[in-house]
Image (tube, rainbow, N blue to C red):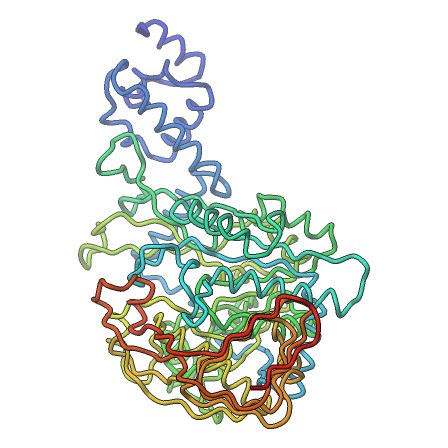
Length: 623
C-alpha cells in the first residue's frame, strides 16, 4: 500500500503539483508506470480530468485502472499526432459546427477536367489496353470495415453473394478479378518475371476475424496468401460536449467510449504499415482503392487505370453521370479567393447551395447532355504511388476530418449522444498542392456502379426512378451489364422484362455471368463471340473458364460451362431446355437464408446443359 510520503515523493520527482491533479488519480499514482503517468499528464493538460473523478481507492479495481491506461495508450498510438492532436482538432471542428461555419466559404466551384468514356468505342478500347498493361504495376486496397446489418444481413458484407446464379461472393469476385488482371498484364508485357499484384484489405474489429476466416476457408480464392495483407483500423474516442471532453462508456467508468473513425483511416494505416515503401521499391506505380459491395467495379478498372497512366493523373476519381440534385456527391473543382484550389467530392446537399451562392442562380442543373456537369463520385480512387508517398510523408496519413454532432436543441450546447471525428477516404485530395494533377474518369452507371447497401424496407421506399442500391438491384445490375456488353459485342440479347421483388421494380435481363478470366476487357470478350449468336430473356449462361468461344450459339434455357486452363471450348448450335426460373419470395420468410431473402427471389434450377472440361485440349459443344 502506498503511503502519503511515497506518493508525495513520486509527485515531487515528476514535478507535479498535487493540487493540479484529481485526488483520485494522485491516490492511485503508484500503480502507474512512467509511460502511463506521461499519458495521465497529457490527458490532464487536455482538460480531461473528469475521466478520473469516480476512480476507486487503491486496492479496488486496480486491474481496470491498468486496462484504462492500456486503452488510452492504444488510442494515443493509433491516431496521427496522438490524443492531444485528436482533442485539439475536435475543439476546432466542434466550434465551427456550433457557429454554423460553412466549410466552403471563400471557394468558387467549377467543373474539373476528366475523361468521359463509353463502352466499346475506340477511345475506351485504347484506354482498356493501356490499363491492362499497367495493372501489374498496381496494388489494390479494399476498405471492408463494415457489417451487413444495414442490409438485413448479419455477416460481413464481402461474404454476400454478388449474384446467386453462381453464388460467387464479393470477395471471391474481387480476388478473381485481380488475378485475371495480373495474368493478362503479365502476358501483355511477356517479361520473364511474373509480377504478383498486392491486395490489401482494411478490416475493423467487427470484420477482421471473419474476413480472415473467409479467405482461409476458401484457400484465398486462388490467390497466394502472401499477396494478401489485412490491416485493421482502430476506433477513436467519443466526445461528450463542445469542449471535446472524452466520453466514458456508460457501463464502465474505466473505459472510454469509442466509435469507428471512417474509411479515411486507410491512408494512415497504409503509411504506418510500411507497405507503400515496399511497393515503391518493387517498381509499383499505382494504388487502387475500392469499396466492399459494388459487383460492377472491375468492369471500369482497366479503362480508368489506362486514363491514369495516359494522362499521368496523381489522383483519378471514378465517377458516373449524375442528374442535377441527385443524392450522390459531385466531383468539383474548388478555387479559394486566396488562390488555393482542390478537386474533391462535394456532397449533393452542399453543391447546389454553393453554386447558387457563387453566381449560378439556378444552382446544380443538367447541361445539354441531360446530366449535371459535375459527375457523381462513386468512391473508387486510383492514386499514383510516388506523389502519394510524398504527400503522406507530410501529413502522416491524416485526412481532413469532420464532425457531425446531433444537438439536443437550437442552442447547440449539448449533444443527444456522444459524437466523434470522422474521415473519408475520398477527402485525401484536400491537402494536395495546386500543382497536383487531379482528374476523373466517367463511365455509364450501368457498367460501373451498383452498390449493395440498403435493406428491402429502405429500398422499397426509394422514389420511383431513383436507384435502390439493394441486394435485389445489385444482382440484377450484374445481369444487365453482362447482357449489354454481349449485345455490344454482337450477340442478339432479348429485351428484359420488368418484375417486382421486395417492393422494387427492376429490369430482369438474361442471367449472364462469367468468371473474370473469361473477359476482363471489351476487346477480349468481343474476340470470344462470333457468327450470329442469340440469348433469350429467360436464359441463364455461366461461363466458368478462360477459353470458351461462342460461335453461332442460340440459347433458350440454361447453359453452364466449366473449363480448366488449357481447355479450349467452342460452343454453338441451338440449346434449349426448361432452364432456371426466378421464383419470388418474401424477405420476411425465414424458411430462406438471409442472403437469399434480402433479394426477394430465389433461383429454381429446373433443367440445364452443364459441361465440364477438366483436361487441356480442344473441344466442341454443339448439341
